[in-house]
Length: 179
Image 1: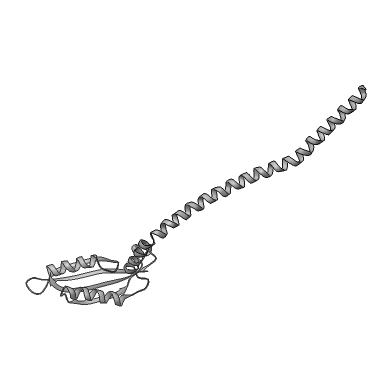
Image 2: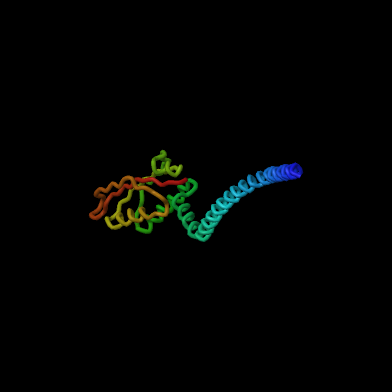
């Protein structure tokens, strides 16, 4: 009986060892798969959080699109996408006429790229004109040019005593920009 009990114990030990080995072969790949799945879930969760933040950002942009469109329209007015020299000349003449100022020697020339124009990949057109007017109208003209509908730079203003008691001879040189 002693040997029968030993054989039974050995058989049982082998059976238990086989069960442990089989479960190890079955469980180890499942454990690796679970670990991989947890990492994938973590990565997908991070991606989802990132996409939700971006979606919220785009939602805010969509809400601000009216403001964005206004800014875009204002920039288009200040920096037209093409050389519209004729519209600039007409606007300049209208400005002078509104101040009862007569312009003379109006000159327009393609300018070279400068620092201001190259920052926007744009080009510039240089302009100059002369006028004879009184001090108040001349000052008013310069102020209007500062707030002109086109982006411009006034590079020089030359003022000298003109013909007549209160008249000044004014020469203005500057640049307008376009994209």
